[in-house]
Image 1 (tube, helix red, strand yellow):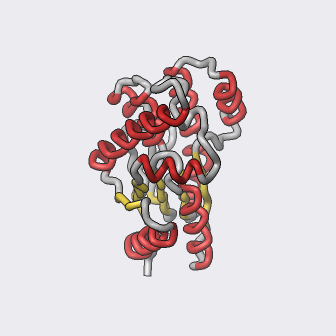
Image 2 (tube, one colour):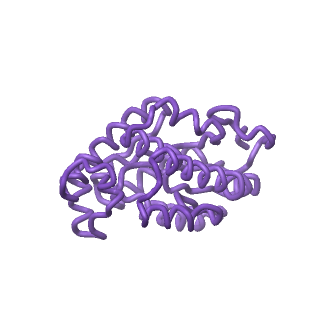
Image 3 (cartoon, one colour):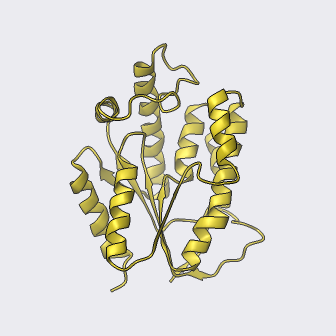
Amino acid sequence: MTKAQFYGEGFPYLKLKDMPGRLIVLEGSDGVGRSTQIQMLREWLEAQGIAVSDTGLRRSPLTQPGLDAAKQGHTFSRTTMSLFYATDFADRLENHIIPALKAGFFVLSDRYFFSIIARDVVRGADPQWARKVYGFALKPDVVFYLKADVETLVSRIVHGRGFDYWESGMDVRFADNIYDSFCIYQSRLIEQFDKMAEEYGFVTIDATRPVKDVFTDLRDYIKKTLIQK
């Protein structure tokens, strides 16, 4: 069992003891392949007889409709949007992640609060303020940082779903066109992830390689450190 630990005071009204589940987080910039790896990990873990639950940003039924509407309208201030995402995270943590961990599930999280901090700081938020907001956050068992350079991300985006307004930082206008803005915005996100990788002890994985090679590294680490013999 894992003893519950928080980055700050946690939820003051929620006293947690040992939880038999495991919390596995995949972080990294847009287009790096997190969702693909989450699906592959889920299938592999379930084949081992392990119960799996997954989550990600904007999946709280409390906040998802409002966040989706806000992103369509582009009307909220940056601080308001930041706190909206924090509310989404808090609701998922309390009502999805923690109950699943108590029940012994392996929880796979496509992003955690680190992505929100990176986005907020790139948009001008104070780094320490952004971190203190998440003092209620549970510490994961492992955070994998899937790292790829901007050139790799651009190639995957161009040959995949295409450029997205928010993933390109067009709301802060780093450039007057979506391609250049994407490159600048993602470069700055990577800088923030690199800093947090050292600060929070991320396990960095080279995500420029083929999907199967990345998966093998993730699988082997989980098998060695998180699955009891």
